[in-house]
Length: 287
Image 1 (cartoon, rainbow, N blue to C red):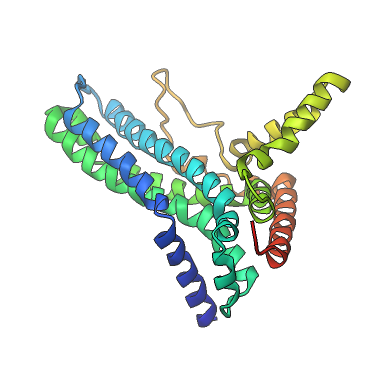
Image 2: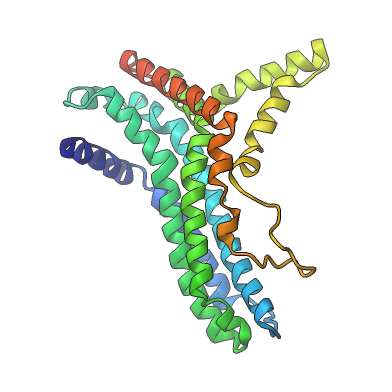
């Protein structure tokens, strides 16, 4: 067990060494946000009530969380498309196959990097950015908005919600992740084009011959179904001003997520895709 953990730890660190965009992109985004907080010409408002104070704190942390999470999705998508393709393109796959590391370990380490490590790096960058930007805005604002950004309970709620979203999104979108890894392990060039081509071809066939968009409608419902399955939005006691009076913990819907059959169907399909990517990796050594 310890040997397995050590192997995966080493393989994931190798991804950090070779693919610096994993941590450089969140750092760049954080620097931009901090510079905006430091030099941006922002008109700070005065908050007149504790409710408005909490609303400002939640809005600020939510904005940073969504910003970093969206960039982590983009970074993870590009990484997964390139993860198994790059080793074949530069022929380094021959070196890795000479080591006592199985193709299964290689693929799973890249899977973990794409769906867990990259979001966690963005998570950490968002926290550090929020801390620094909050301090800067507090100094510049000289009003109640400064104190609104320093609320430990809201910060903790955001942390728990972040970790929950990372874990559940990794399961829900596993078929998408598996498809990207199949393409990365199989194609000889242009993995982005090959990842999109089957869906574009289906769209054209359905449009011109059947006049329908069945596959695209299904994919749209599945891609957009995650918030419905994983997050609870009803009964949040939203005021006229748009403030959510209940804690963010109330949004977490563990029971709804794991009782949704789409969760398990998607996980099974994703696992099959990952297995296929491993098999392709075993048989392909050149781009």
